[in-house]
Image (cartoon, rainbow, N blue to C red; front, side, top):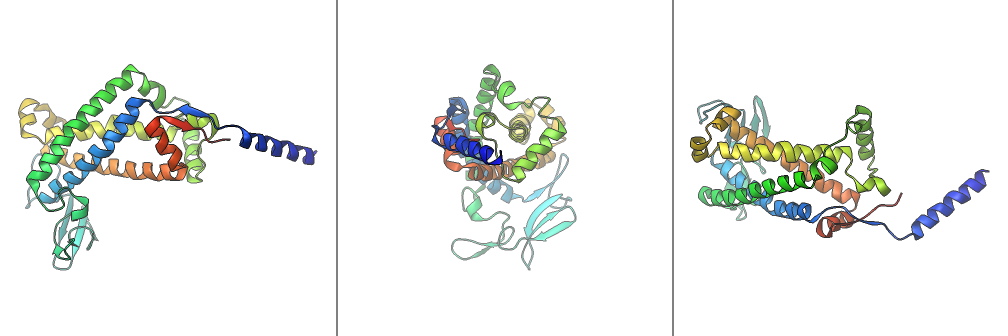
Length: 283
């Protein structure tokens, strides 16, 4: 009996290997277009944003904040080296943050290094031009993508988790599968799993709108037009802090996203985001 069962399983596996791969349309063109536009816009905005942060590498809560005030986050340098200070915790960051070596071999005391900023040399005016120009592209793309997601039911059909998926047992099972690097196969790979849905909804519905609104709150022109933004975020310095935190979470999401793409099979994953066609991994 065991022998027969083994032969049946081997035969089924052999037939599965011989069957042609199943190709499905995984990403529609608005999703693919918005994805690649964001690759460029977010990269430029993050790097130019770090140059803007270098002008005053301290973050505060409330309406006001300047050098004499207590900052909850600060990147700086002493005679001994660079440091990152969050509250009462201080970490030495010499060579990476606060104090680092530029391309010419000179020592520089500035929060973020030249290779992480646009422009690579410190120029606040140029950085603001880059940041604001791409910010409008980013905000416009987010608005258009949001409207399309609602009209095409992409949000409700593909991204919002169902009640069954939000069950703790289901979420824990998915976490366990990902920890073992066991990714969905066959028909299950057609849809986003619950961890993907939670991550995408968190970025699309929380982090990106927060970045846009806090960015507007830091604009004096918008303060005059929409003064309620200052009340919403508790002041311009609080908005700046939330802007920075939300951007840091987006960077974390991008790093995890890239890691998952590499682990799940980069050729198939990237091809699906270029052509929309995705080869379902066999069971």
